Length: 111
Image (cartoon, rainbow, N blue to C red; front, side, top):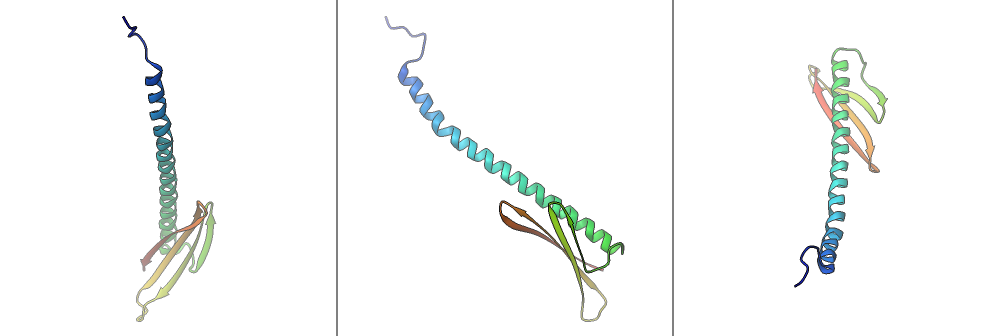
């Protein structure tokens, strides 16, 4: 009568082969998710910075054109008037580097 209390060597090798395939795939998914999360966090920070600069410009706390840095971001603010000089277009550009590439958020508002 065969002993049925344990696993055979073949069953253990099959499980190890399956794990050898699935673990690297899982790690790639986790790494990709972490990278996407970091990029989203940086983009949100840049958007908040652009909104803050826009509020300061609209409240006349910052004169245009202006530039600044707030690590890891750098920003610049420019304005241009329309043909009738009734509206001013204010453009805030926030840039940062992520994974060796230059990223940017551009916010445009009028006053």
